[in-house]
Image (cartoon, rainbow, N blue to C red):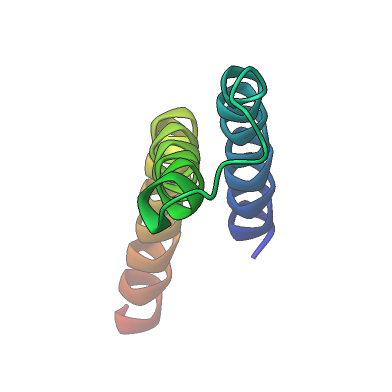
Length: 83
């Protein structure tokens, strides 16, 4: 459960970072001009995708270790119960 919470934290931190970088690029644009749906939602969509991707890349080794340890303990417990 704690691994899931850390993944959500990494994902949100990366999303916020990517979104703020994209917003800084758009500060130079004129605010009086109406933005299209593409200009409004695309930066947030890209930031969310990038945040999820970076969180998966950073936590993949840890997830692998945790799942292998779980399988190892579960296998040892099952063989202990059968003996």
